[in-house]
Length: 70
View 1 (cartoon, rainbow, N blue to C red):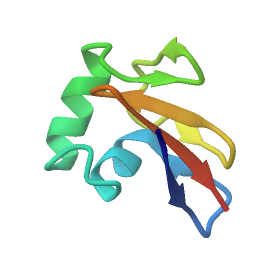
View 2: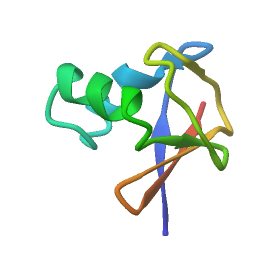
View 3: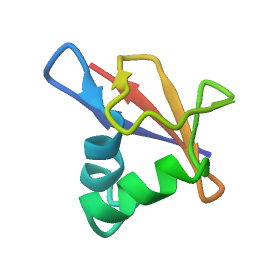
């Protein structure tokens, strides 16, 4: 099952997305899991905490998929 997360701006930073979507309890936790390679973007591991996430991008973390929509 793929969850969706709606953004109103052009993009959202990855660490902010994980926190806003309640996939992490805090921004600090989000930064750690990204840096440690636990998050993938469109099927590829990403370690840039402030990576820009755009509509139609899919994030995978903790066996959950999250699609960003506008």
